Length: 136
Image 1 (cartoon, helix red, strand yellow):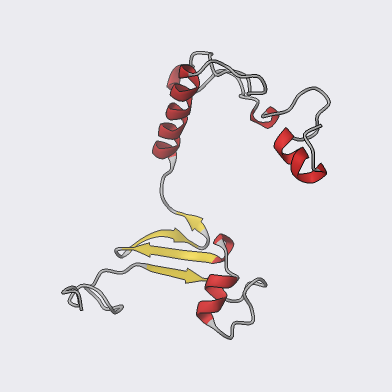
Image 2: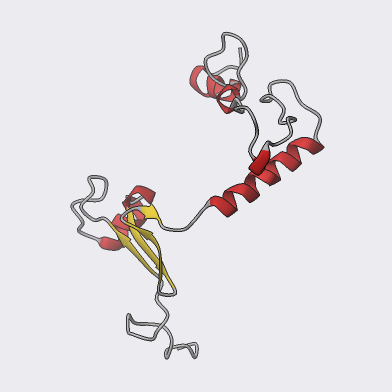
């Protein structure tokens, strides 16, 4: 089928292996009567215990085994660039203008928790609207 049966289609030594192992004992999927229905209709990321791509384990016992330092640094650099290109808007978090300290880290904390909040406001406007039905 599709000319790749010699490389895929079964879990056999020497073939490509992409596997996802789901915890079928978790309360949100048990008891499993229909495995496909349980995965599609009930399982979520908390049920994924192991992931193997091309024979390489990427997630084991529910935890990623990959080093995320490089991707995290790239995402933060992208964020810093984008924020530097747009004038600050009312309601944004504090600008990220401080130069990074040695090693690429900023010298002070970034107040991410204050996103969209103003004095005395307990949650961002879009959440207040969802909870209370208005933006006031």
